Structures are given as C-alpha cells and as structure tokens.
Length: 288
Image (cartoon, rainbow, N blue to C red):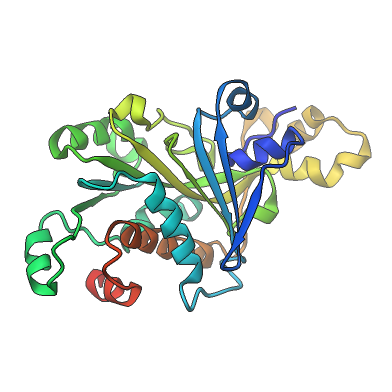
C-alpha cells in the first residue's frame, strides 16, 4: 500500500530503511540520493533529497536565524556557483495551504535589474543577479507553470531555477516543521493533489532546485492511521471519507501562521544562499 507523500524521507521510512541523519543548530538533517530501484520504490524522480526537520514553525520563532542559516547552507550547496538564478513561487495565493510559494517570493530580493547600482552603493562587487516570479496557477492564467517558466528561461537564460511550493506529507508530525530540498525538481500543485507537469532539468534544460514545506496530509491517510487497528481496509475507510472520489486534505488550524513563517524562512534562505554578503536584517530592510 502506498500513501501519497512528497517527502522522499517518508518513502524510505515506508520501506523500513532508515537514512543517515546529522544534527546541527537544533535541526535534524537527512541526506539521500535516490537512484534506480530505490527511486522507483520511493516513487520519486532520481536526484538528491535533503530533509531538514525543525521545531514547529507555529511554536518557535527563529530569533537568531539559526534554522535559516542551516536551510540557506543546504540550498547553496545545490546551486551553481555563478550566473543568474530565477526564483519561482508556485501555488495559489487564494488558497492558504497552497500560498507558500507566492508568499515566499515577497521576501526574495530581486537584483537582476539593479545589481550594478546595488554593488556601487554597498561596495560589494560580487552580488549575484536574482529574478523572482509567481506564475500563479493554470486555472487563473490558462497557462501551465512549465510553459511560463520555459518562456522566462528562454529569455533570461538563468543558470538555475529555485522552485518553492507547498508539499504533502504522509505524517501529520511533519506538517509545518520540515523543509525538503532537491535537485530532482518539483511538480507544481503536488501539495494539494493537483499535480502539473514536472519542473526539472529535463523539461527546462537547466538545474531546478525544489524547495518546499509540507502543509497538508491526505484525509484518507490520516483516517487510516487513526483506525488502522479496527480491521477496516484502507479502501473501505477511503470510501467513507472521500465519497465518489472527492479528495480531501487536512491542514493545521494555525495554517496562516505556519505559511507566514515558512515563507519568510524559505525566501530569506534563497537570499542568503545567493548573496551571503548581506545579513538577514539588511535583506529585510531592502525587500520592504
């Protein structure tokens, strides 16, 4: 039986294989490289997957930015060292659990148009060009996210794309406290079960780094976890909670707070990964 999850680490847990872990700055970090049979078993594209588990966003404020530094460092290691980077915030701003990508772009400092002037003002000669976009969703634009980014990449010629999106988890304990990074790309809409064409190096021709936080769990998965000992089959439970195939998802009550803090974490992580010469406080002042 396979339960839907966007987290590679949960695919390995389902196969009863415990990936190695590292602890740093209050975070638990798991690094995996899925290839061949292992990728097929986890139902994930081949590539590197990094999972950073943090204290819950809703209960903790990253006052000294120690969690932010961890995520930024992991992201920096996945990116090419030079060239313009296009940050893309995927999702629908009107649906709170799916608004992570667009909200994260509000914290990303776009420098492509002012990198020379900014370098002159700050005295930093190594500033990197960054462009940011929130392509919205197919239902609002009539265009697939892949089509929009293909057009932008053809015009801007970035060295990489960082795609931010909400994810779905297998376990409720990972909601609002887990960050996944991957060089295998990302599928827009995966977090709310409306998966669109994959964004990857194969489809865009350049490295695509997926960056996301799980915000939902399938209702049928949660129900099965709670009632597994009753003897009812997964199919029977699913029919009760999702009649006629109407898929339902569960999200935390404090989802607004979770999205706000997760969006800041990911947006600022992109800033620090690309232009570490600035502090978080300086980025905050510049993007306001």
